[in-house]
Length: 493
Image (cartoon, rainbow, N blue to C red; front, side, top):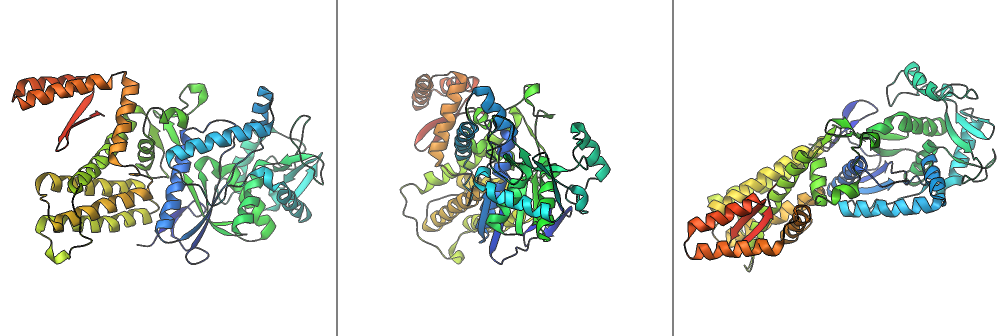
């Protein structure tokens, strides 16, 4: 099955055909750097990170551009409140952005341009629109004339009268139409400004992505992405600015991720249900948040709550638990490079076929509009089959070791496409224990004393006492795992 992508522009899934064979050019709207990123930003970052990873996994050369909006009303307001420069605010939150993205395992795009680095190109673009009759200047401001572009509204599919009604909330009598939007803003005293033919000012928000997208990816490129909230007006305005200037399509596929709600309510600082990425990663392993976000189709809304996070953590524990058992089975063994399939026994052959089938199932899911939820389902199902084989049918041999080694490599390879299973299992469970200790206030040394007491009881065949200790630990939220290397523990989900 070839890759199909749901295109917001057409409202349908379409066969993906890049402009240039073997190469994909993708632009995704980045953040306005005036505060720490929240989990809505996390979803957009993770969604397009996985799309980037999957396209590369599918042997495309990917040119991925994601911008920083580093001049904006919100940045200026924060700078004035703190008595510092807009540049200082932007630098602070760009650094915080990287801290969050690196923690989440989000790969760096090919390019990350900043708006302030492209002012001259924006001025030139606005000049061309003005010369062509698509823009007009008023008192140092420049507006795009929506009436000059008959296709306006094609992306968001909103009637003009509906859009105009919303635009009248902030009426500006200087504009020809309430829908006309700012391409260039005259600067007020104390605001950052750049010289222009219309006087000192700064770019409007929408013009920056049009200019930077076309500078780095060409007049027309393959994929333009962002959150669903950007469809109107931001992306609608981007299309108008770009196509009114060039007369050519701006982007061939428009991809938008759905919203993140908090316990079925819209996330809002005023409602007190606003969570930054930093806040969440203080509580859970970064891959837990990734798995939670990817357990839903990217276009669907997701409901963030403690129960959902616990479910995601339990699912990740099971995947890492399977890798841990694989590693234990392979530890100290000499694994052959390969064993002919014809020599495999029934149990080994079933596992090998399940892993081979996993690649096809994974690709089928991801080729269906990047269906990460279904792809994860296939990973979990294969992990369960491996776990059953290790528990019931595994006996060390050249054949079985080769099959398990291939299975482990395969799980890690496909997990990496989703940004998951990137740690060694021992390190993952160590971090899980430490996080649980921090939140519970329990003492690791006291837990180890209890485990040692249980081990002594088991060695003395005092099974009743061993069960009592296990129950005491379970009441504290501690789950024990007995293995050939001894007993380990984690926090129950």
